Image (cartoon, rainbow, N blue to C red):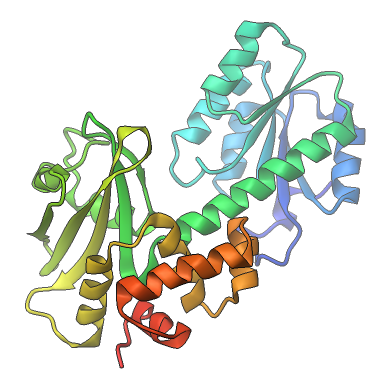
Length: 309
């Protein structure tokens, strides 16, 4: 097994995926760790919850295998702390424990775990589960990042005004407007955007204006808001491109497709990334072209990149 020092805090996509194994008796997991390394994973080990959190300050693994019952900080509490950190919340946590009672299984899922493996560990079974969860988490992250196409962001707000989800770009803009007294809620200055069909713009401390457009109801009764940042009185290709994309009111999936198109991906590539067929991708593109008023892939890609002809 490799030590923490052998793994850089930044690594390209081509490197081996990293899994952090947290157990107070790591020597008992020798076969599991050997199987993971033989299958292409880089394995890091922590003997308790506190050590795991310290390692996570230096490296962000692709998945975590976490013992639920450990002295000191329990695995369940460790998971809660991981999920409370926005920079780490996306990491899939798989519990490994001898606690098989229903209450313990439920606690594992309630604190943010995605799977629950009962000891004694069967290495091949854990490997199969780990591969599935790590792959799904990676695809989810790629899709989430793709939402921020052409400098725009997306926010979902529930019926209580709480932010249910936000794309990375939107998160940066919200942070500047966030009310420290009411964290997690949509800022008061943006509440007018919750009215169906609303489109508002608010000034920021940087001299820019944040435009917010209500795209209507999404799943679970949540409201979808589209964010874009513009300079006061800004013109030119970038401003026109941003406004035109906002007016097109693309769906989240259409936005993802357009983002990958702008990155030069083919229909087949986009289908593999989003888990759909090239024919479905082509259907999305037809709708995108119609909404944007363009006829070619090149024109749509240029518009998404903020370069109008």
